[in-house]
Length: 440
Image 1: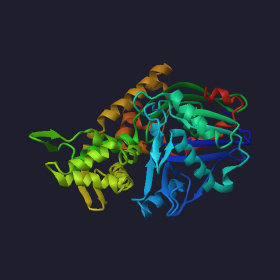
Image 2: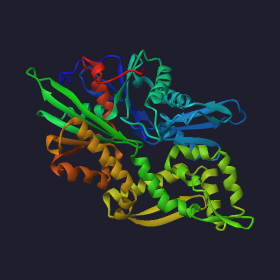
Image 3: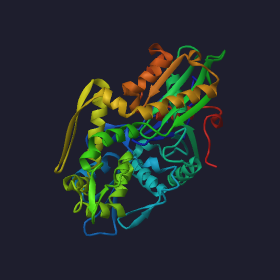
Image 4: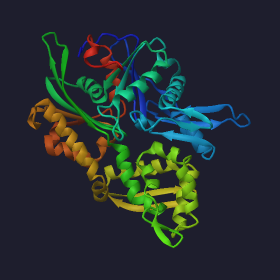
């Protein structure tokens, strides 16, 4: 890594995340410049990775597509008439996801991503840096989903990003990009474990940094590991314990003379936010409406229908996010979901939440072990541990690293911007091929 960074003219770093997307370029002074957006409520740099589709009144053939906070605004104004999709990055590596139909039009994953990127660029305006011909895109070490196909994900990425007109499109591991960001703070040689906790994945890289005789920071990647669980998986545990039972999970319905359980698959859609928009238009939705008539607890099934039909998914997401944030600071907090006629309010202790997410914490810890094994280092071989991303604030996550490496080694910062900034810094490397790859 070159500490006297050469200006990387024409390079743009794009952190397309499950929850947010952040973009950065490198200024002539060698410092990363984050692109900001004049959103409806405030100036932002973290652009929500969300899409909305709305048929213009009286013009069924014309679809109004929006992204980020503008998509949220469109949904809030007309939830019944707006198809709202968030966390769709989680489908990138899934061969099971072929297409979805929105307002009569077929969309493959790359079409959704293209629609999102085009609106992202439009809202960035002149700050986008039209002269940028090289894009460095962040990618997780392991993509989210059941049996993810990384080559498929990168092929889909390539199609979408190529539609923006880039000549050279490269992909870099997200925790490596965060390491480039963190290295700017180092005053001495160090071996660093970087943990990046996003919405869909938790990724880890171990990088050795040292200064050569000329004072430049050099770096060597030692190991990478990752797991397809993170913030969205924590969200599902909250919903599964607090919300789904109030919407009919665990209840029964009558079929002739038999009492049968409500199918659990209706509730597994809550495991990933992007699935809610698809369930609303699925065959299962018709079945759920039919079960209201024969359910032993019809009020609960009716509430499920309302949550899906009236597009309350984003309001549910907000309620879950508020609870997670509160439990990161307090020992207990109140969960409140209030949308339409559905109201769920419960007090939750932090210890309860930590018990719910124990399976995900175990998998995260196993990924850390995998990174250490691949590096050939033990815990004592690490000088610093840099944790970034929203779920790094969860106390149970932080304890994993404090227990293994000691609280004194832990660092944090740049939770929303570290990857995008690091991608921009990476663009100044003399040997970019060492740190990034092109889609095959």
